Image 1 (cartoon, one colour):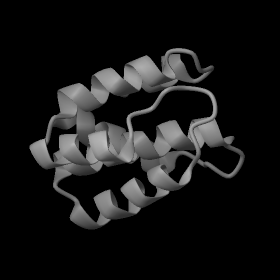
Image 2 (cartoon, rainbow, N blue to C red; image 1 turned 90 degrees about the horizontal axis):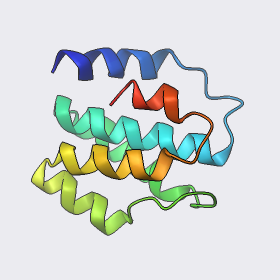
Image 3 (tube, rainbow, N blue to C red; image 1 turned 90 degrees about the vertical axis):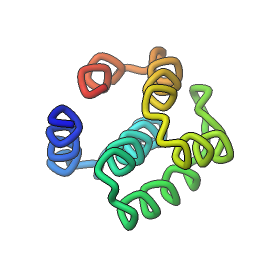
Image 4 (tube, rainbow, N blue to C red; image 1 turned 180 degrees about the vertical axis):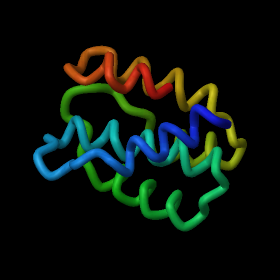
Length: 100
């Protein structure tokens, strides 16, 4: 849990003003994962909504249905594996990989 608390704080400290859509998609996906672990229902709903609103243009991200299923099951392992797969082709992979 300590790594997720740290990741939550690190995500809050990131300035996303200049993020492109692919970076925003990964960012909100990470916020979904950390909200699930923290049991933050409000943060989860907001992050999930923002994640769903960003088109998947460069990678293959989980569908909203898959993500909702994993959230319901609290399957953070599956969420982390899907993120690694989706983000592996992006420039920010090494940064985000350290958060997982």
